[in-house]
Length: 198
Image (cartoon, rainbow, N blue to C red; front, side):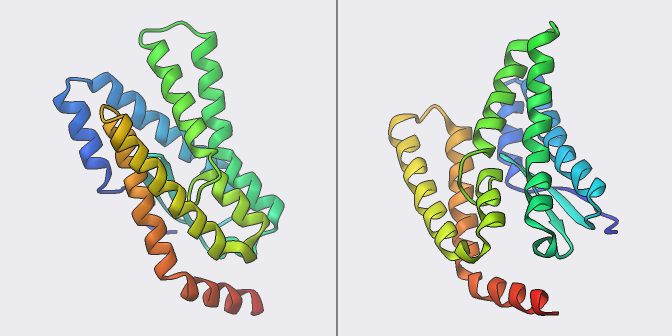
């Protein structure tokens, strides 16, 4: 197993700076802790299902887990691993609703945002990954559609919600991620074909 299992993507730096400079240290701790819990949900299910974890990178919308030959696992296992993160976030949401503690309202709002964002049918969010697991042959269409939707949401956010800087940055990041996936789509498809053939 990779010694550096957990990583934080550099895109998180502007988010950390924003919370730090605005004096919202409590918000930063809640967001980061919630993202970690979300990824631990994925990791827990993956380990229970026998998947081999290579790395886990924390991102603004959750994270990205790399596993050995994930596409070779059955569709049921893939979907279970993907739903592990949202399920963990749902548990945190229920905890926030049932237990009264300082910052509970903010904590609940964060869980709603992470859950709602991750279940959008956009790659590489969990909703998009579920679609990819069920219909792997539609990968090119999925990332093309995802990239277009992210550009539209980013543009609308810039024009009509300029105060939602964090939200806007997330979708800008997703735009670039989908562009990267699009550029290397043929290599990925060829790699998947080779690994599935062996």
